[in-house]
Image 1 (cartoon, helix red, strand yellow):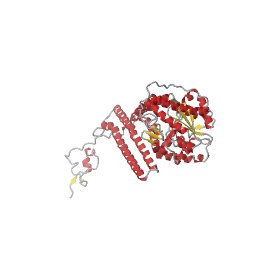
Image 2 (cartoon, rainbow, N blue to C red):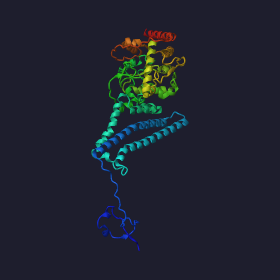
Image 3 (cartoon, rainbow, N blue to C red):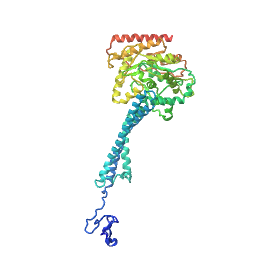
Image 4 (cartoon, rainbow, N blue to C red):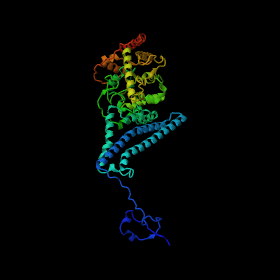
Length: 524
């Protein structure tokens, strides 16, 4: 016979009700709870409940938790952007069809590893943010019930505290970032697109496929290339020429999709916020519609390892594949339905491939600017100091210039190395002699190239004093009526009176006079 005992059948509070024992009676102990409710046993304690918290206290705690969450999300943006950049690198490795299989597999394995570690790091960081944001609410619940208030931000007036707390950090950060031309996400997009050459090739293939029919038609005019050593006036002249309805060039609005400008234009339609002074501090104004030396990114993607070396930019031959792609690139930039127009580009590195292109693109019209060597050297040295400081304070400036192969000055300085030219300058960049030597090497090589490949020479002084006459000479040279309005004279302020190597300057002045003679002969 079974031993009679109490059976637990209702909540803890029910046995205390008067008369309950008589109502339930005695039954066998079928659940193994012998003696739990037996007479004389200790009373059962009630379940713990959340402490009472005043409205304002809870509101403030919700506000603090929301601020912590928003700050955490903002901090997570950096590892998330890092993950996006690693994803771009992985895609670039997948798209690589030119590297040896063994090297390609190593690159792909490394990219997968970097992607995985970036993803795991982001997940761990996100969990930490959630825990930290929950701490104030858990402390409010106490040790007895730490999760009692985790749902409080979504109830009643606490929603306002949550909205205020999550919004405030974003407002503060947006105000802080207003001084930069490029937001953190914009910088990430630039890195993904411009740091990965195989991705760039794939984008160009898509762009070129959309405009393949344009390449079937013969171009009425060859490309117009404005070049010269940096600070010779190339930006001013290119800006003037870009106002012509007959010439078409890349502009800042095409960044960062320089190899797919028409595809990018379908998605990105920036508002022109007006012109302002560029970073050079030379009173030259620019806007999103301004043209700039952007095309050398094309050559970097297609053959960068052949001419961009440590501390040097090397004169080189353009291979047939790159030449065909370059001619297709020009047709991509010229709008649909404008077969009689021409491609315009500013490219201060053109001298490195001028001989190669001039032989195989007889329709190309190259315009080289030159300037008084002492003035020019002074301007280059000033810009080197300016951009070195700027790049130290904001490393993205150097990244940006490296993508565009702008190594004329700054921390990314690289020197031209010509096929028959002298070695690298011996004087440091802090000396005017360094820049005089750079000027002399550049223009001595140009004079040699001009003997076999004619081009139009423009004196910087002529551009300043009579820009309209310069335009007329360009119209004659290109055989195009550019339909440009009259242009005002430019301001000229650069002088130099410091010490310099007089023998080095004398050699430069001799080259300068030879350039002027060449210019005068072309006028006759």
